Length: 584
Image 1 (cartoon, rainbow, N blue to C red):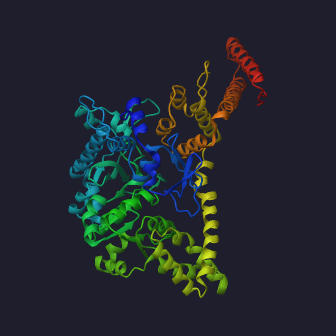
Image 2 (cartoon, rainbow, N blue to C red):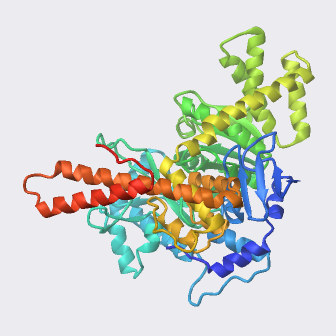
Image 3 (tube, rainbow, N blue to C red):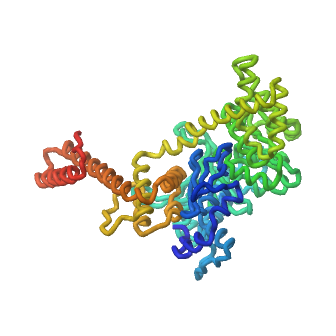
C-alpha cells in the first residue's frame, strides 16, 4: 500500500489551505451567495459553470464534471500524485512534514521499485536473452546509443525472471504490484511479472526518474489481438495525463530552439532523436491533456503538432488545438500523407526533409481554415458558415485576448463578412459545440458510471453530510465498501474524494456533495439505504432461486431446506422494505 498520512495531519493541511486562493491562481472567481463561481480551469468555456464551496473545501464543474478537493485539484491540474499534493500544500502553509523513522519520502518505495525494474529490463536487453530485441531495434534503424539514451529494455519471456531478481535483492513484492510490474494470479494467487517477451519503454518524470513502463511485442502473433502498446496503470507515482514521453531527453533542445514537436508514439520520438531532431515529445498512450499542454508551455511557447497521417491522427490533431491554444501556446500543424507517421517518414526521407516540412508548417489558423474549406460538403454561403463553425472552439480557446480579436478580424475578412456578424455567429456556434461536447463527451463519463455505482456514491455523500445515526446498518455497499467505513468514521468530503481513483466516480461524488443540502441529507440517506437494501436482497434471492433451479437429484434435502428458509426470510425482509419478490 502507498504511504498514508495521519488524519490529524491531513486535517491541518485542509484547515490551513484556502481553496479559493488556490484555485484563484488559475481562474477568476466571483462570489455567488456562500459559494464562488468562475470559468472552469479544466476546459474552455465562456459561461461560468465552475463552482467552489470554501466552507466544505470542494469544487465542481457542471460542464466537464471535474470535481474534488484541494488535493485532487493539484492532482488534475499539475499532474501531482496524492502524497505530492499533500506535501506541496503542507509546505506552502508552513506545516512541517511528519517524520517517519527509517522511511524516506511517501512514494520512495514505489520510485525505487520502478528504478529497479528499469535497471532489470536494461540489463536484460544487454545480455544474450535480449539479442532479439537488439536486432529488432537495429532493423528499425535505431542505434544502441539512441536506445540506451531512452533506457529501452527487454522483458524476458519467463514471467518469473523479474521476480527472481526482486527476491534475490531482498525486496518485497508489494511496491512492484502497485506500479503494475507484478501481479497475483486469479487462479492460485501466485506472483508473476506482468510484462513478458516484450520491448520495454521506461517512462520518466521530467527529473529523469522512471515511474512507469510501456511495452510492445516485436514479432507477429496471429493469436494476439490486443493493443500494440500496453502501458502501466495510473498509481501513486504515475498519472499518464501529466507526463510527456521523452521530456527529460528533450528539455534542453526545446529550450534552446524555443519550440517543441508533439508526436503520438514512443517510436516517433526515438526515430526523430536518432536522426538528430531532439526537441520532440509524445503523449503517454492517451489523448493530449491540458496538464501536458501546461507542461509544454513551461519550456517553449511554440509547438508543432506532428501526428500520424491517418484518420485517427487527423482527429487527434483537431482535438489537440483548443487544448494547446488554451495553454497559451503558438500552435503549428503538420499533416503527413495518409500512409505515413513521423517514424516512417524520417527513416525513409531523412531528417532534412522532415525539418523542411516542419519549418514550413502553417499556424493552426491557416491550417484549420484551409482544412475546413477543403472538407466542407457545401459551397458559397453555407460553406463559409461551416468554416466559421469549425473554428469557433479553437478561436475561443486562444488565451491571449488581443490575438483572439485579431484572428476573428482576419476570419471576417476572409469570409467577406462583418466582424460583428461573425462574432455573433461564433458565439452561437460555440454554445452549440460546447453543448455537444457536454452531451457526448464529458457527460459520457458519468453516463458510463453504472447505476449501482451512482447509488452507492450518492449514499456516501449523504452519510458524509449527516452520518448514520446511533444504530447504523451493516455495510450494504458492494462496489465501494471501503468508502462506507471511512464515511461512517466521520470522513470529510476531501478525505472521501481522495480515496477514489476513478475520475468518473470522483466527479460524481463531488456533484452529489454539492447538490445535497444539509436539511434533506438524512431523508435522502434513508431512501438510498432502503433502495440498495432492496437491490441486495433481490440479487441474493435471484441467486438462491438459480441454485434451486440447478440443484440435481443428488442435492441433500437439508441444503434445499436451508435455501428455502433463507428465501422465506429474505422475502419477509423485502416485504417490510416495500419491495416485490423477484420472479425467475
